[in-house]
Image (cartoon, rainbow, N blue to C red; front, side, top):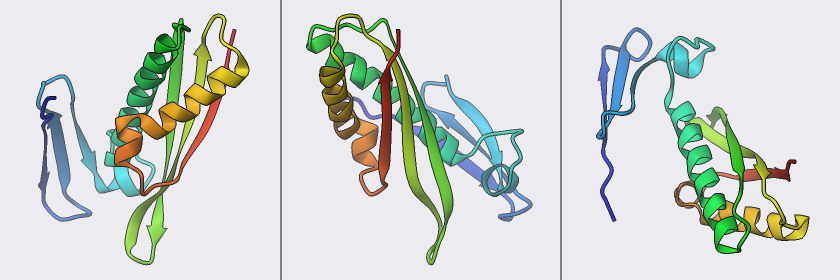
Length: 143
């Protein structure tokens, strides 16, 4: 498999400084600051939002593969990740991630869908990388 690369640069102090990041492909780049990470400034992104995007994308693709392999090719899988960012006695921490998933899958039973949704939660590479973080799954079939 491939090695994926990303780069981040931080300039200045924690509260007054700012950072930029970019993915090795050039398709992803942006900026972040103390306020976008620890306050509610939505003018740029933050690492936790990027983790959420990566997790949602990975999960949706992995579930699609599981469904297709089981002969239930999905019409669509929409996943969102809510990353609970807080503090503990060691400092800032990701407390947990909630994956909310809506999937349109003709012909699949609820039981089979639930089985494959859970299998995907446990098997997607980003879920596996984040194994130390509690992950809650809310997956539902939609018509």
